[in-house]
Amino acid sequence: MKLFISIILIFFYFNLPVFAGYPIVRNFTGNIYKSGAQNWAISQHESNIMYFANNSGLLEFDGKKWRTYPIANITKLRSVLCAPDGKIYVGASNELGYYQKLSNGQLGYHSLVSKIDGNFRNFDDVWNIHRAGEKMYFQTDRSIFRYDGDTIEHLPFDDKINASAIVHDVFFVAGIQKGAFMLNGDFFIRVPGAEILTKKKIVAILPFQGDRVLFVTNFHGVYLFDGISVVPYVTGIDDFLKNNQVFSAATNGKLLVFGTVQRGIAVMDIVEGTTVYANSYLGLQNNTVLSVAFDRQQNLWLGLDKGIDYVLLNTSISNIFGSNNLYGSGYTSLLKDGKIYFGTNQGLYTASYPLVNVPEPLRLKLVKRMEGQVWNLTEIDNTLFCGSDMGAFIVYSDRAERIPQLQGTWSFKRLISRPDLILGCSYHGLFILKKTKNTWVFSHFLKGNFAETSPMFEENEDGSIWFSHWQKGMFRLYLNDKKDSIARVDLYGPDKGFPTNQNNTLYRVQNKIVFSSEYGFYLYNKQTDQMEPYEALNRLFVSPPNSIRLHESKNGDIWCVS
Image (tube, rainbow, N blue to C red; front, side):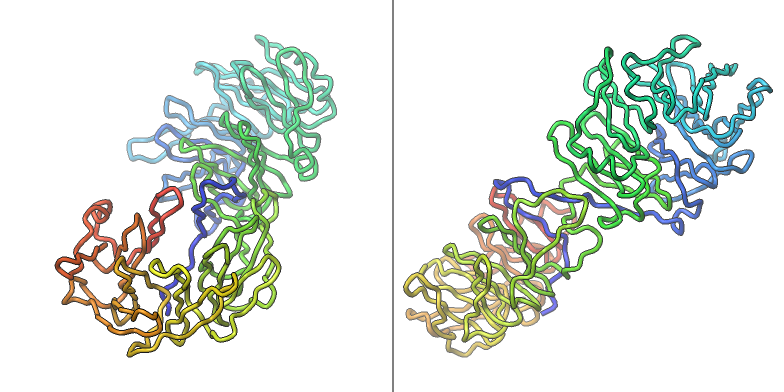
């Protein structure tokens, strides 16, 4: 029965608390983009093309192809900024300038070093580039170069510069010895109250709610400047930031992202007060994040010490296990009584719910003696049933008890016509559970001329049972009044409207039994005794859906899984 597929587990209980999740991450290794390992800065062009300041030069990604443009003096590129006029400004060691599109569609480089006074051309690395109005600012270790499109002015700074930014139209710089300053004309003046920042390495300067400013340090947390004074800003993850050496940071107004040296990134939602993480346990290639930047889709690009990662923040789908999934392929999941259960090909696992966002992946506990393939979890009458390769079980909060008479079991359905009975299917056929003294117990196997097994069956409105076999077709089973025997079996195949007998599946959605086959969805017409295309659902797809699985969430949405 290889119908089951490994999927990202998606939960449909929208009326329950939001659970922890880690963002989906796409990795771009050096083997993919074929350039240097380290990526020091990121900027998105007006054409949506992404550019990276890479050890080997300017790295370009158009969504499909990668291309590297070496800098004039063949040194490491440290900074990049795409300007509205289409120019791509870059900075390297003793080199700065811009790239611009040529007639052949490639980029050509224009150096601006010749515009710098000869006394100041040994400026080492250009670490940041900013734009204010028509002026460009290039930040080196100990000075700022201001370019107006014609000439370049040299603005010295009396400290080693660790960070710079233009925030709320003010140019800020920060040095480790003297703290934070603002540029006023051609002179730097100390930020009021910035004495608290002296002897602290500021790695990023960011805009914050209203006209406030955040100073992000490597080991001392975050500080807030409100125009009058500088005070510590409590993030809720201060210990994480102080213990893992922040190296880079970015914001889109709603989210604050901190890139660290030791533990990847932390993404803090300023409005909700929540934080999600991504690191080498949770999908990143490595934990040292040299640069971070949001794109226009509000997803996140990371320039790593080795590689580039794309973090999908602007999506409803998240990953709850990270990249190191030790629990196998997911087949079924269920929430009950403050616990979440996962059935995989390796066993039945559980964790407390709601889940908590922490920098480490979710760790699950194996339900005792529930190793091996789990097919199904179903809650009926406040009882949790588990169908597995080892048999049928009733799961309690701390244990699982096997229903003795049953071997490997697929699934369970409570009969609508007889709520005191549960119809199940094991490897040996269909069976009945009966409620006795508030306990569900095995009653009997169904007799009759039908020996197929399957996890997919549903009760029809007349009490008959639709039963799907992945190779042999869709059967309709009629039970006798005692529900102990199958009195009649009808096969619904190509002569009854299905295009094939293989991979015909069925699901109960919107109070209908919907059938899925090779050329779309079908409904049963009892007047004609035929399967007919379910056009209302089929026309939602560009092409006829092929054997798609359906799930109706508690709020009435229908999820489709191929």
